[in-house]
Image (cartoon, rainbow, N blue to C red):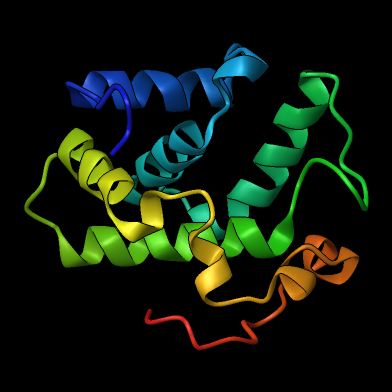
Length: 144
């Protein structure tokens, strides 16, 4: 479970807004914040989170003086898998308010930063190829 669950939709939206306007401190760009930003974008009917998140994360990293390289920063496979997991979570829980959806996601296996290692081998997931472009899982198929 996340140490400090989100108490309101406004709190989740505030994290996403600060990510989008580049005012979120790098120290607050945690796994939970990544999930918050993705869920907010997935809930907005005018946005395409799967298409937009890669460029937004790259831009955010640069604003925080972080590299987007073969060894650091943006990671295509992790981002796309995580957005797909968020989309599946929201589809399965349409009745939940945003903050409750995020809190239950973070309390689930998908809320653990290492959840991807159930689907990808460490070598494949952390390869330069997976950082640069989508690589399908090699351990087992994603359930969504």
